[in-house]
Length: 298
Image (tube, rainbow, N blue to C red; front, side):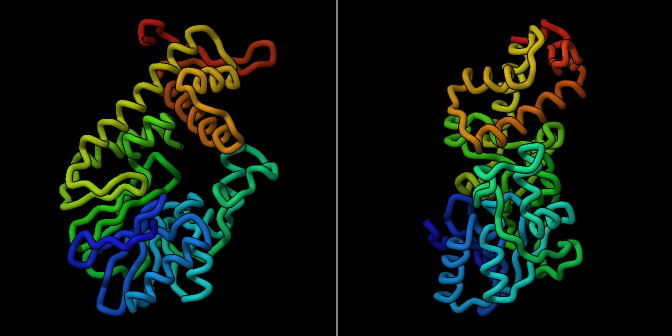
């Protein structure tokens, strides 16, 4: 873990649970793409920078999930680097309590106020105003979180953040976190059009052909939709739906999975409602969900 891997002339990544991109601007200066999941990740990144004799010019956070911004505070405090992301993600980067609050739908109880859901705050700026290395580009990757972005280095290497997850992760957990399902499908279609020399998902192996993994993610999302349509052939309230999803995918409930999977399932229900496949109504003081056309459920 935390090995530095060179994948192009000036593009590297640090192998860790949420892969960190490194772009070398010169012999002395680099930019990071994300910063790992906690201050320990920050220390390990700094050690790599020191070993290479590199100065950290800036960090681009693809989004504000704790496992992508956890090293920010230590690196910014020690090295004085600038941090950039999109406006909505910056709000969470500077106010990390928003993430567990958003996931839970209220003030998060103590078990949810942990480093996996809530990083320490750091100061961030709008990436659209950043003076990025010549030839480096950012681009939107909607779906997973509010304003997630990807980064293309001048070596034609695409860092794809959490837009797709590895087949191994999907086989184990089945449900990757997504906030906006319609945007997620559009992002998968967009990634299919990219022409890069290498693609690096944060939670997957680097690959020269991303399309098979895109299709695996698309199929898994459609599988979730099909299961929800089947579960809701008769009216169900949310906790029933969530329980059935855990049972059908043989998942184990814990506090973190409750909010991560629960929030994602709510997003799928919203998608099904907005696309005319699900109805929602109140009965006997329960909010109920029901598949509209049984022929669509299988």
